[in-house]
Length: 93
Image 1 (cartoon, rainbow, N blue to C red):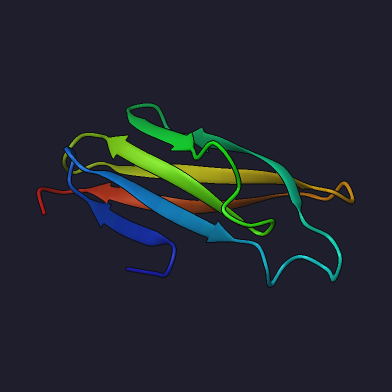
Image 2 (cartoon, helix red, strand yellow):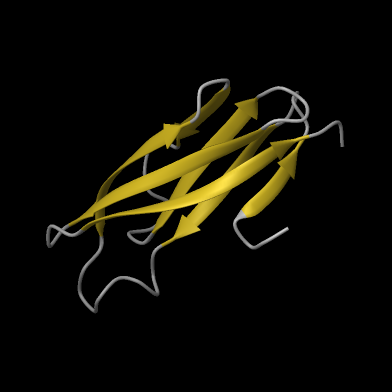
């Protein structure tokens, strides 16, 4: 399992943080973010950014044995747009 792969029980509702600090140039911060996920899993963003550089995503559901992609797309104050994708494997843990 790589750093961007996680295992989750289908009845769990867990939060995942995507930290943009290393990618952001000095002085730029995350302005907004959206979540894009595969069908069959629920992935929603927290109501606000945890910090100006960290996005939190809540993930639940899915079918045991499936692996789902969850993407965090940010737009920064300076207008940069980028995606970070992680994968959630659903297992009875």
